Length: 293
View (cartoon, rainbow, N blue to C red):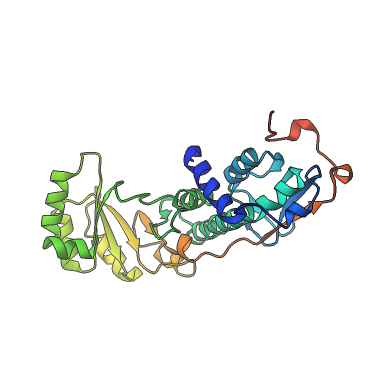
């Protein structure tokens, strides 16, 4: 996780929500301190520890406890506990919960897809179908759920898709140009939709061949035509409900857009403990982060 980038993003998110000040929380005595416990309202996988720690540091809150990313949780489980100025806890609440719920939803969906596939030899990956501004966090959530990342950005790898093939006049020309222009460490992946394109991609010696929108039966037959040194990927419309059907196709990678583009957030709630005089504070040794003056 790039902590510099994370902090800059969190500044933007806080500014977006707080504006010129939280007028509701401003009703509370600025000296009042409280503790806040966030609990899960659904079963799933927690993700968001970096967000919790970074926001706490920025907002001068104490993290009394926090689960590690990738931890399985059940309804009612405590995810993390914060302590600090009551005003600050409340003005931070929505940004904190929005991110933790969203990232935990992605981690949960990823874990379920990995478990449904039930084959550690096949990588379950995300795509670039991410929320603008949240790609780094969303891809981290995929890893927390047991998946792997596809390209982070367009400069990570060459991916020759249908429109590139059309614009460049075919797969052969596209791969040849990529070999000339891309560095030797940059892999070249080609998307194929027909058997003719598959043969052309093999002849062009692509590093990876992506089978787009093929049935499991087609994939299994096409995979036998691909030399072992070329990796293969299944993509297009694969979901939690259908991923197990691709287990025996022989592909190396299955990319699932559903992991990030339409995931359901893991519902959770933040409950505030009254004034600090009523709070039960954990022993200092359990604290994960406490601001230092």
